[in-house]
Length: 219
Image 1 (cartoon, rainbow, N blue to C red):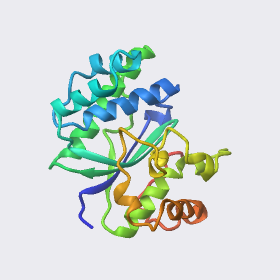
Image 2: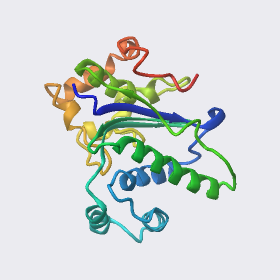
Image 3: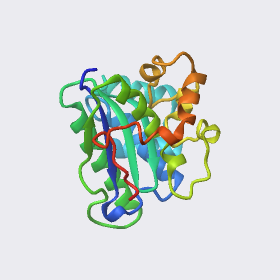
Image 4: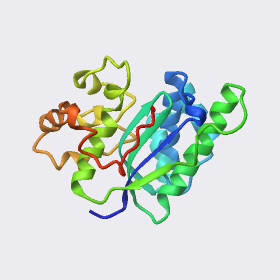
C-alpha cells in the first residue's frame, strides 16, 4: 500500500476537552469540509452562514467547486471529547500538513472566541502515522470507529455506533456524507454486513494493531 494513507490525530492541551457541545462538533466537521480544499475559502463567513442556515445545499457545493479540488480525502473519522482521529488519504503533495494546520488554526480561533479563552487548544499541530499495509488500513478504520465504544464508562455498542453522528460509521452503512468517502475501506469486505461483523470483534481491535500505528489519547 502506498504511504499516501495516514492516521492523524490530536488531543486538547493538558488533555482538556476540545468539544463542549454538539454545535462545536458540527462546526469542526463543517471546517473539515472547507479546509480540505486546495484554496481554503474565507471560513469565518461561510461557516457562520452554514450554522445559521443561510447557506446550504447547492450553494455549499458551489463553494467547494470554486475552491477545489480537494488536497485530502477523509476515509474515516471519530470525534471524542478531548481528541479526534482521521484515516486520511493525501491527494496532493503536502496536503496533510496543510489540511491539519488549517483545521487546527481555524477551529482554535472559533473555540477561543466562543468560550472567551486564549492560547493553544491542541497539544501539537497534529500527530501522524503512515499506513503501509492493507491489514493496517482495514484495522485502523475499525480502531477509529470503535473509539466511542472502547471509551471508559461507555455504554455504546456497535448497533448504536452505526447511527452515531460523530464518527464516519453511519457513512459505512449507507448514510450520505459530505465529509467521508468510505468506498476504499468497504471494498475490502464482501458486504456492509461483513464490515459490521468486523467491527463487532471489538476485543481484537486494539490488539491487532501495531503500537506504532495508534495511540490511546484518553490516557
